[in-house]
Image 1 (cartoon, one colour):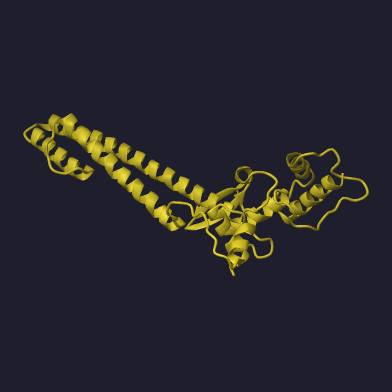
Image 2 (cartoon, helix red, strand yellow):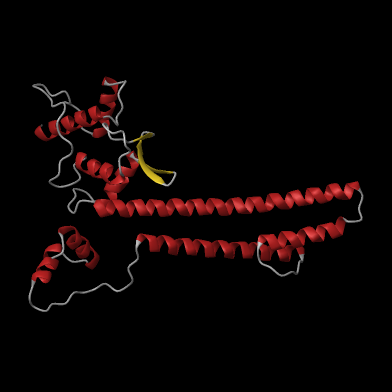
Length: 271
């Protein structure tokens, strides 16, 4: 029999209720499933496909640029890339200015410098486009990762939870490793000081904010006493502002903040 996690993933893929899928798997009768049309891609396959599309677009952009420059300068030569154009262009300039004086040499140098700057500008634009594409792919990969660990039943829509999570956390990459930061600081385990994984940070966030039905966040810590110290505080933002004033030397990424926040949430439930 498939394990619970596999059942859940398969039911999402087929678009049917997990309970109904389990009944079909257990049934001795022959039953049919409506299998969605199309092909399935792994994350690695999607990344390679999108990378290939980017490279194809980049090559087409360079060829179009060289074609326009050929037309502008009335050049006729073999080759479609920047290197071929520069070689031909330099040869033309050398021929043009080969019998000149110092003034001609200065003019040649100025012409070459201008052409170099133009190509550097174009190459810079292509580099920026590549960086933007890389960022988009990484963002989509993280979103898919968060959707994969999202609780099945939530108090608000999954996309809204991810948006709220991203408004407080940043996902950065250094030396091929991914880290989660909050307020500019990497989130680490209090005891081991090892960086926390995206999965653990997101799971804790969903539970702490009460977005998962029937799941609570990390407990313990400072419970309110006889009088409610959080009276009048209605939102997490109000709590954070009050906490910062009362703990000027502490960080909102510390375990003390988490414990106090849980106490605040509990006081709201009991109010």
